[in-house]
Amino acid sequence: MNMRGKLKIPVMGGVGVWIGFSTGILLSIFIFTYLHTVELNLTFLLAGYATIAMVAFLGVIDDLVGWRNGIRQWQHALVPVFAALPLMAIKISNPPIKLPFFGPLPVEYFLPIIGTVSFGVIYSLLFVPVGVTGASNAANMLAGLNGLEAGLGSIISATLLAIALQQGQVESAIIAATMLGALLAFLAFNWYPARIFGGDSLTLMIGAAIATIVIIGNMEKIGVLLMLLYFIELFLKARFRMQRQGFGILQRDGTLRAPSGKAASLTHVIMRLGKFTEKQVVIALLLLQAVLSVAVFSLSHFRLFW
Image 1: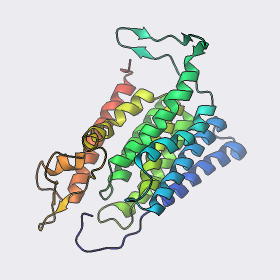
Image 2 (image 1 turned 135 degrees about the vertical axis):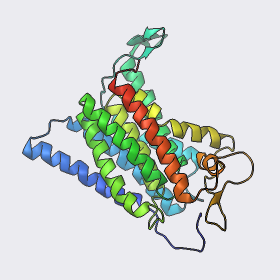
Image 3 (image 1 turned 45 degrees about the horizontal axis):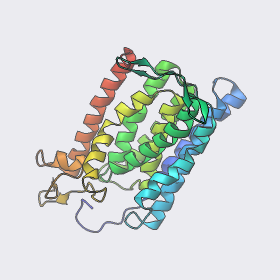
Image 4 (image 1 turned 90 degrees about the vertical axis):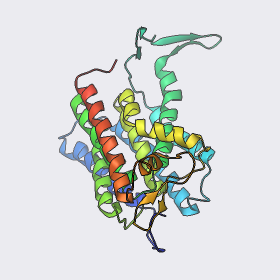
């Protein structure tokens, strides 16, 4: 979309990332089962893997149909809810939510007719599917430039890996480490000029992995802050009812110009700051994510989250 000529470049690169990710998960299970050098909750790990695999399969279907004629937006929002069922089925012990000035929220709630309902049930049945769906679709929005999706996913995965290791969340650390390794291997081929694209099979899987890591590791607030750029992208695209893409208009000097009118993506915002090539636009967004990740890690390290 951003290059001259009609180059034929393969898509569905997310399948390769999924194979690498699956290999890492299976290796960790082998080490746990036969070598006994890693202590982990196998139920949590398999539930998280199942959710990520099902979301990746949704992305493969979308890639096969075609990104222009693929799965509709409401289907993108609905299908990951079913993929979240493995995470909804396991009992995750989340600490009480604390709000500024109000303190911790009650662990149990009394609802008319229904009776007493624990927060754990509300969390599993409401927040888990919303988190998986939201993160999967968010990662699918800020995409379209060489190395952008895999680069952002690598930085976020690395940050979550560091925080998970710091907090002793083994299952989250394993998922983050395997996703990071697979994304870095893919990024070597996806960096500008890309020899392969990730497609929805990659973007949806990255979002599902981020959601899974933070849900299993009780790092929800961290996950929300790390995805700040995606929230900004959602705001920009919502003004056009999610119908605009983040591509630029190629100029003779090789730079990209943003389409006229209001910016429909963070990529357009960067393009309007100067004359930048596609590679430079991607590097600028990766630097923004890196700064954000350092800030979030610092907040976590010094325990500044409420």
